[in-house]
Amino acid sequence: MNKPWLKQYEAHVPHSLTYPKIPIHRFLSDTVARHPDHVAMTFNEIHFTYKDLNERVNRFAHALLKLGVEKGDKIAFLLVNSPTYVFAFFAVMKLGAVVVNLNVGIQGEELARCLDDSGAKAIVTLDLFVQGVYAVIKKTGVKTVILHSVFGLEKKMPLEEGVPQPLLFQELLASTEAAEDPTVRISPGDVAVLQYTSGSTGAPKAAALTHNNVVASVLQSDAWVGISDAGNAAVLCLIPFFHVFGMSACLLISVLKGYRMVLVPRIDLMDILSLMETLKTYNLLSFPAVPSLWAALLSLPPEVAREHLSSIRVATSGGAPLPRWAHERFEELTGRRIVEAYGLSEASSATHFTPYPRGGPTGSIGVPLPDTEAKIVDRETGKGECATGEIGELVVKGPQIMQGYWNNEALTSAALRNGWLYTGDLARMDQDGFFYLVDRIDDLIISSGFNIYPGEIEEILKRHPKIKDAAVVGVPDRIKGQAIVAVIALKPGVEADKQEFLKYCKDQMPEYRVPKAILMREEVPKDPAGKILRRIVRQEALAL
Amino acid sequence: MRELLRELKIKIIEELQLKEVNPDELADDTLFFDGGLGLDSVDLLVLVAMVDRDYGVPIFSRELGEKVFITLSTLAEYVAKMRKTK
Image (tube, rainbow over all chains, first blue to last red; front, side):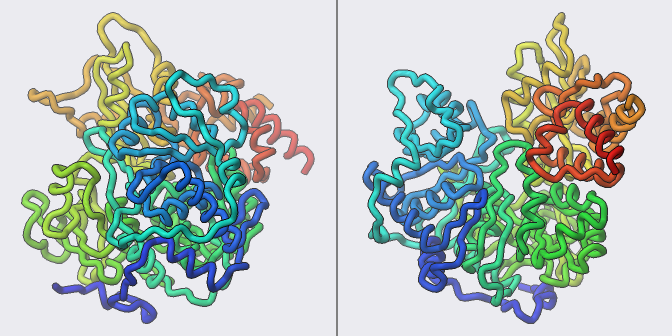
């Protein structure tokens, strides 16, 4: 296969890597052996060394063992970035169990479906989310609820009969003696993470990622940056660990390298403001973020932005394309480039990066990582290979690509064909091997780095008693990449104002899926076959 | 104060591209969150950037943000107060 991108590799990046056949938690064991006293994480002025971290991981692993957790069991996580996430993640890995990684914003039917589909036996969560968990627990196979209590909210919540009493994370840790690593034989080919992601039909789907997939992904990203002398440098962990970008670029790279994770939990909206203090306090090596956040930070007055951002050696943007003005502003302020990453849940994290540190052409997602193949195929047939510059579907292959979608043969065979992952992204490759995203094959909206299918929102809108029909589209947004606009048609004879529907959306869906605007029309534009005419809906939304 | 409030409403609508919102129809006590403008965390950061850039008033801590970003009026009052003290 012709790989024109290899000539873009910086001198420190090998064309191919050797991937040790190890489980993910070996990153932790190796770092504890090398740097036991390095600070592993900082959270609200509390610091844990790698030795502290490993000791708590082992205690929690033994607590889970006592609760009957076995190899292969699915343990759901509904957690923000916090020490609890890190302790629980590595404890589950050491037991050979599987982390079911869930977005903390999901609730109701969607949460029930994810818990049921994954077969989760236990859930680890915060008291902030526990009411939502208990609202659906009877529809799932969850038998154990472990919660980290921040505000004691669980004490105020009456429990229905027949549901498990919540167990407090802090008490479980305290009740377990310091212990050695649990002895569980884990094959690196075992599934380690079920990464839930949006589904085009509105039904969630989970990418099944093995230890091998995740380890390969982390090693590829590490080799790409090639920093070997940063000691106990700090990484700002704002991207949620429940997203593959956060899991890889924040959590696992840090643990692999012995870096200090500075955890920013984002429990509520105001948490974003503590980011400004954090940026100034820590001399950050790395800050992975989504374009909307970069855009917001780079909108600050130049001297303020410079003061807060100039220490960052590895500034990464992923989740959606970063606008040209943000690239230019960052370079102007700091003299460095923001490196863009392209990835998918199905690829454990990244498949493409722009070269570090020199960056890539603006608008490009970069070039394939070592051992990653990529090509542009005919968008209709999914076959052949498009000529340089021609637009088609981007397909990728490599050691980081998932095994398939959990419990979903049909979706797996559509997405994985002869080892190639069909990304659903329309793209082109230039003569220098740089790839550029052009559009989506389906109607996926990417807003603030989150993938959102219109069907997920339309389904919820149509459940409202006053709404007859709904269509949702994405429109360009300077900060978020795309903003969501909904067009709704009311049932005959009913009256309502938009605020009522916006409030309903806020109650029913995660913040990032709430439409920015709702347009009320007599009918939703559809073709004779009843298919939504999104092109027309989009025109109306753009005319706003 | 009235002038500042109106100016802030226009700037907020522009910065956040709230194309459907008319500044004259925005009540002074409109909440930024919870059923008001319904902003998210990135919107908040955008507004923090705007207030610092256009008025020289930094709101870079959670504690301060909680007191200032309640309604349009609370923001206007804080901006007015800080501008006076400069």
